[in-house]
Length: 149
Image 1 (tube, rainbow, N blue to C red):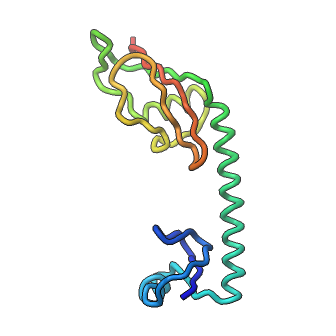
Image 2 (image 1 turned 90 degrees about the horizontal axis):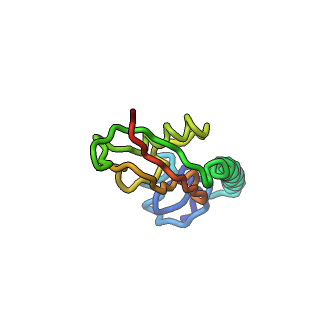
Image 3 (image 1 turned 45 degrees about the vertical axis):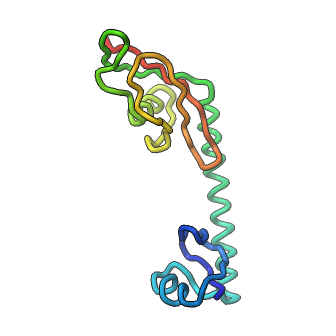
């Protein structure tokens, strides 16, 4: 059965996509939950409009992310943390700390979940940190961890 998705469905498609699924899946799961509509000519026109709106929104978000990435590219942010002898920190520098430093020092609003940090920074020094601003846009920022006075 051909259906038009009204919402993003994992492993199936995104809002506005025209997909072919098993009759039972459409009748018993997708349509009753409001996730899809049976594909008719009128619904297909609505799907085209949804798809165009999604593409326009994605384009705007990508452009905004590229603008933020341009401000972050090649920049260094400094994060102060309490440290003991040998440069070991008494805690760690987390993605939240880095996002806050980006906002305070560079004026870039970055969600902490966008900061790709394999594990928290636990030593003084400089580390390269990736910030995924959009699915297609990634910026690299140098984070310098310094001892707090």
